[in-house]
Length: 231
Image (tube, one colour):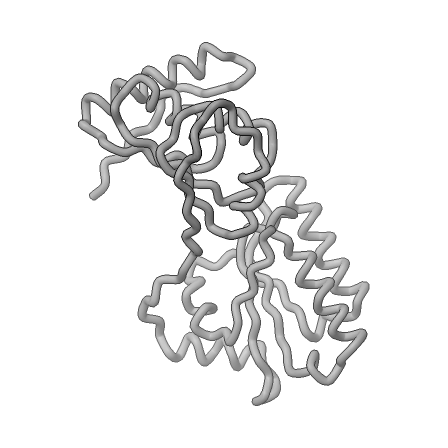
């Protein structure tokens, strides 16, 4: 299996000494285990990994996959990294707008997310389609993820409302599943707003909410289209 290490303390930016302690803990781990590459996801981790990059010969990869442009993102560009990877052209363009303090041009690349082609029980796939599709010509669209505003699920609902307003004939051949659950209290408010939007636009016949699924691959296989609304 893969060795996993859990940092034994809390890290808080309002307590700078906790950051310093974490950096030296990570440095010790890197040298002890002969780690030759660091992979920091998002700005918070890049600040820690970049600091270790300063004091060790280890290479550092920074992965940006969420909202880009905040104060932490700007701070993170102050710390060295050898390559920065994005999961969309949009995030790449947002990163390019950030102030980069004294760093030379850093190698950047975009790696689009993919899906693992795993084996799924055909009966499970058939049951999903039969449950949600009432007409043979209907197409199943799924949009999956944690129900939070930055995932942009409201954009999908607004798009469906636009289709209903302008071309009802297309809408009747569509069925959308929004798959996921809210975790934080503010996200639960957002989830309720989404459901109210569906009622407001009278889309309950065309959009269904499905809670978090462990076997999400079955829904991937059952769908005709996957919609990514993340901005």
